[in-house]
Amino acid sequence: MLDAVVVGAGPNGLTAAVELARRGFSVAVFEARGTVGGGARTEELTLPGFRHDPCSAAHPLAVNSPAFRALPLERYGLEWLHAELPMAHPFPDGRAAVLARTVGETAASFGPRDAGAYRRLVEPFLPKWDTLARDFMSLPLTALPRDPVTLARFGLAGLPPSTLLMRRFRDEPAKALFSGLVAHVMAPLSGFATGAIGLVFALAAHARGWPVARGGSQSLSDALAAYLRDLGGSVHTDYEVKRLDDLPPARAYVFDTSPTALARIAGFGTHYGGYRYGPGVFKVDYALDGPVPWTAKEARAAGTVQVGADSAEIGAALRAASREGRAPDKPFLITVQPSVVDPTRAPAGQHVFWAYGHVPNGWTGDLTDAIERQLERFAPGFRDRVLARATAGPPELAARNVNYVGGDIASGAASGLQLLLRPKPTLFPYHTPHPAVFICSSATPPGPGVHGMSGHNAAKAVWKRLRQT
Image (cartoon, rainbow, N blue to C red; front, top):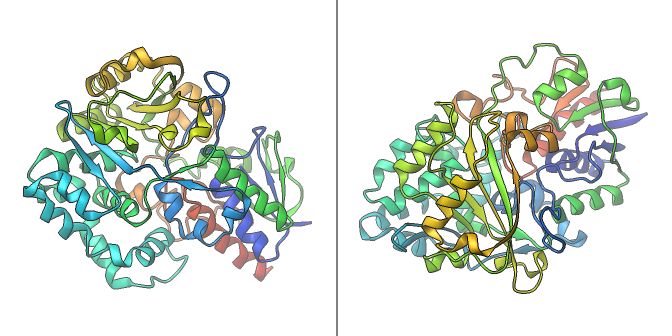
């Protein structure tokens, strides 16, 4: 009998398996797709030689993750590549605000009226970032805070809505960039704890950047799987699990799946009936014959580029998708251009490019034209660079990955109390109604993103049980 079986080979499932195997437990992972990866995959979606990331592409949380930093993933081929700028936020007039590695360069891009306010916001936390990140990403009850005073100060700054935090700023460059940071988890700007989301992304960039993985996000997943095998674990792909009886006998079962899928497989009925899914996304992967012709020079040097004219436009796009049930006319776009720094991703002189906008959950329309109209505002001539495109709306995303219910790549609405207390309001979020069944997906704290910490935290709950039985 195995000690643990993990269902789902996304970053959280693989991390949970690695953490258990490191402690001497026998572990097997079962994945429905033909390769490991979950939201961290790389595929040729458009033309031969163009390697795209179907979901996550830039990795500020991964490079800062306490779980990943404790693992020897570089030995297994993971290499982080950093663009000149982690992120840029261009404006229609050709200017840009930037999220740079240094606080000073970032503050300077906001202009003199907001430079000091930004420094005062982030500089107190930056020297203690590693401890703060561990404390923030280990909650609740998986580890006692190492620096409770700094964590409390962070909570005072971050728990209010981001709209309140942004009152510190007077001009649009700072407001728009910070609004875009919050929008990375598809949360309305006025939501509870959204200030913390923006702060985490900003601090992560200043601490270690927003890199891409050489060769694509698949490199991270492949490194986790290779390390797991060296620890004695096994990985089984093309293995769809429809019920617990499909799995071999084990002392514990760990699910890197949505709560909906877990309830269906384990027979939990309506246990997660109150869990809410958030907006979906409409994503386009491009093969380009050259770099994106951004008007702002800063955007040409950035790995990630946020596209939204101002904070009001960004807020309106988020409200349309999350509250009004419609696709925005001017979608806020998160874009990534990996080949700016990684030449292995496309043939010589050509590029891959990735963009998505928010749409209502389950939306079945086509946002391609609206996305490209937005891009043309900030990069005139963009359409002329397109060699091929691959589009995926909520139905296609859900078909590729059943955890993306209705196209929600965050595996659950990151709003209200569910931002912190997920998948249910409980101090034991990784436990389920069955004492031997656990959940470790992004539906558990600390929530969305490629960081492995949900798997790391869940593994602690699992090995406590294994030691007791």
